[in-house]
Amino acid sequence: MTQSEKAALFASLHRPGDPVILYNAWDPGSAKAVAEAGASAIATGSASVAAAHGFHDAEALPLDLALTNAERVVAAVELPVTIDFEGGYAVDSEPLAANMKRLATTGAIGCNFEDQVVGGEGLHSIESQSERIRAVRSAVGPDFFINARTDIFLKAKADTHDEARVDSALERARAYAEAGASGFFAPGLADLKLLARLCSASPLPVVSSRDALRTAR
Image (cartoon, rainbow, N blue to C red; front, side):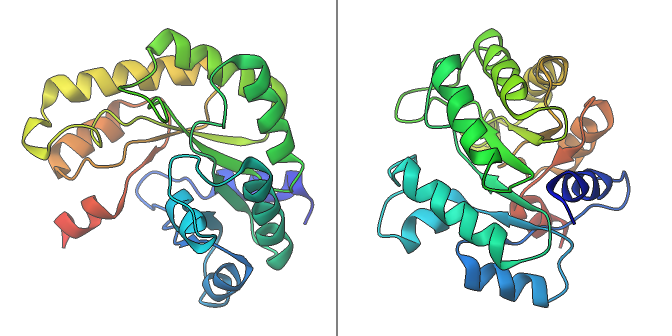
């Protein structure tokens, strides 16, 4: 399959009521193992990729090494591969777009792109993150799957997860959709009632994390 065909396949896996389950790989060997187990697509996790190379998470892994690893993972499997690219290794739009263009040239069909300030405090404002997403979309073209991650829930204790926080997440989901995002990733939200509301009201397909799966069990 071409990169464009893989991107279309990955997008088609996001179906309401029939969620795609992605297991994070960290190198070519783990990607092959996940593929051979029957996965429909491959994802990576920034923490595991960094740890496998002897680095901490939060963009401590050098950019060139992150891109080389992404290229090797893509080459190891025939499945669509989406990369956890954290904050894109840049804040401003111009260097961010350049980094994302380099990621797309690895053959990856998408990425996680988070709104926390990597190496700093809090989250980028909605306006700032929306502008960053627009820059990414301009750099990678229309087919690349931008999984816009919000850390609203991950950065807050579980007992503070409430309807108001979901309202804030939905505000970001709508803004990110308008800016060109393809999906909305809300890690850390394990309350299934709140998660159901987020899924039903979001204009983008919602990606959840293993925390919600554990709660469902």
